[in-house]
Image (cartoon, rainbow, N blue to C red; front, side, top):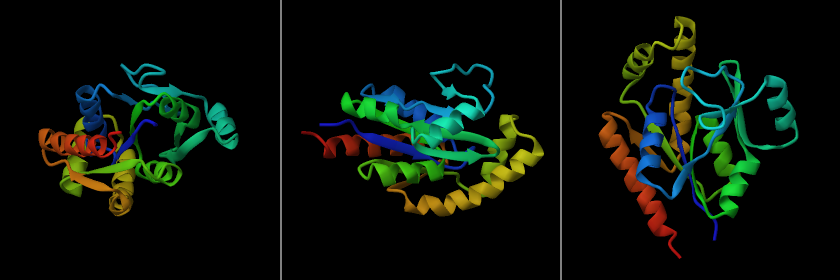
Length: 189
């Protein structure tokens, strides 16, 4: 018996991280899979809790050594899930919830076909742009890149097991919770 893998992904600003945190709070049998990144730490983030913050050189060295389940360069920063962390959790029969980019989710599915992929979609591209602007964390240049990437991610999201439109956060969380519960029910011993 091994743990379960549930992967939540979607465009930046879709609400995937907020949904993932709520699912973790509702499901004590799941723990959050902490990704590694080379991006600068943001106010309030904690190394080893929010991300494993690595230098670019360390990240590249570990990626070349095959230590990542998935990795991706996004807007000049590297992100990835460490294979040792995933295997450790599965070996301990722990359930992992991933909050990763869309390409990373598809990479996880290739290595772990039993993983359940949930795509969080915005109600519209216009709404996504508004959400990103309201975060006040992006320059106009970065915002434009994120919007351009969102179109690609919406297309790739069609390959996921489930698609949840985040029209209102409580409804989106409820829909994802039902998916998680169904996943657990289907895999009872």
